[in-house]
Image (tube, rainbow, N blue to C red):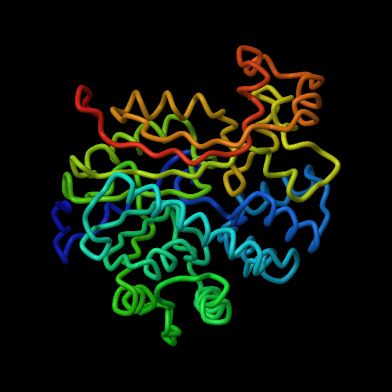
Length: 353
């Protein structure tokens, strides 16, 4: 039976995360899939990764830096709006979330309450969930990133690529509202309750009120200590028979812009040195797959599925020759080499958050 529905007047705790704004939802460069995003970004711009780090540091330090970041992505790198291939790959991730959830939950999607943290700029995942039959969603982000032109471009893609996507329904209504009413429009047309800025460590949502929790390419951008608190909150708000589904990208995201470096380049740097290249708007925690499994288990979850992509023999060879920072020498090469994962979990009967 689906969990209790949040009261209509409920609002999220708006307190922003500390640590210079790092944390939930800083999927600022919209890392949407693995092969598709590399193809898109390489076709648009090839940028030395250290220069990108410097730009992101500047954006992180100046007032309203996220707006400058949006401008650069929209008009220079052209990573916003995402390409058709990136968009289709993201919709496929949404389908994988739903398929995984339905393997363990047996109520109709229309009766379930979904919760997604870190929705990013374009709302592709929440709109995909709507297209797959979800009627009630709570979507949170550390800061308000949605923009009317990007949202309507996403809706355009759903309509233009309807036959290719094979979804049971397609978002039909463009949003033609001033910014202040955009949130209301999302809820009215698509059942998406967008809360931003919102602290995913302390949402204020009722206990056991959520049936399905998802996150897509977000956790890798959150400091480990905050992930632990977010998972504790997920444990609190998830219903006893609810399910969570996370997609995580473990590759060095700078490699999507600079083809001269490998996907494992960031494993060479100590935490102290990496801090020079790790500004808040492009934060990468560098956790590996086993770390996330441990975090989930510590928070009281049982892992139901662990679908991860291992490295090729060539990539394993590249990694084995890399001069690793001390932090990563306790991992096996195979553990370090995992590219990405879909992890499905639910509350463990013997544990508490």
